[in-house]
Amino acid sequence: MPVQDNDDKRTADQPAVDAEELRRKQAQSREQQQDETSVQKSGKLLPLLNAKAEHHQSRIDSLDEKIANQTDKIDRNKAKIEALSAKADKLEDTNRMLKATIGNLPGIGAVIALNEKRIQAIREEKISERQQKIDQGWKKIDKFTVKRDRIEHKLNRVIALNDTIKSFSIGFNKERREAFADAMTRLNGATVDCLSDKKATLEAKKQKILDTY
Image (cartoon, rainbow, N blue to C red; front, side, top):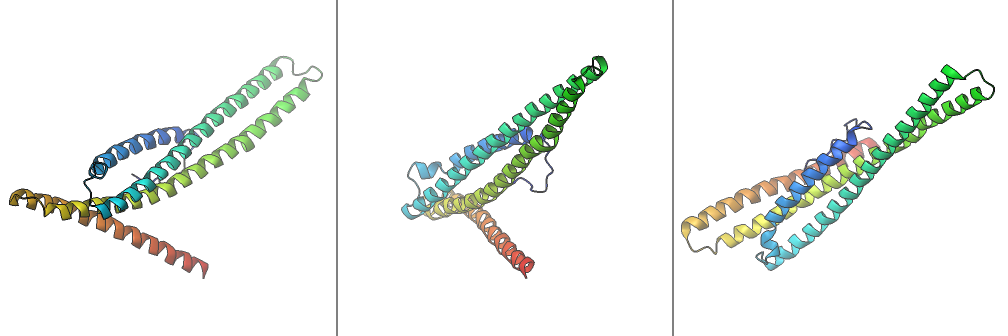
C-alpha cells in the first residue's frame, strides 16, 4: 500500500478525496492479500510457516482497522469544517444585509459586532482545530501504513519461502523448475523489501542519535 507523504500540505477540501482514494487502495490491497494468503487459509502452508503467516496477517488486519478508523475521523472532521464554513458564510451574509438596510438602528451595531466575533472564532479557532485533527489523523495513517507495509513484506517472504520448499515436492521436472523459479523470484523480492525496511529503521535511529547529540 502506498505511504502517504508527510510533507503533503493537505487543505480542508483535500482529505475527502484522499480518504476515498485510500479506501480504494486498501480494498485492492486486501483483495491481493487474500489471493496471496489463500494457501494459508486452505491449510497448505507448512505448520511452522503457517503460524508465522497467521501472526503477520493478524497484525495487518489490526492495522487496517486502525487506518480505517482514522480515515473515518478525517471524513467527519472535514464534514464539520464544511458545516462551520457554511455557518460563517451565513453570518457574513447576515451582517452585509444588516449593514445595507437597518445598520443605523439602535442595537443593530451590537448584533453586527457579535456576529463578527462569532465569524472570527469560527474561521480562526474552530476550523483551525478541526484542520489540526485532520493533519494528526494523516500522520497516524502514515505511521500505520509504513508499519503495515513492513509486516506485509514479512508475510510475503513467509509465503514465498513456503512455496520454494514445496516446489521440491512437485513430480514433474518442468513444473517443479517453474514453481521453484517463481517462488525464488518472490522470495528474493520480499527479502530485499525486508532488508530495505531494516536499513530504513537503522538510518532513522542513527539520525535520531545525531539529532540528540
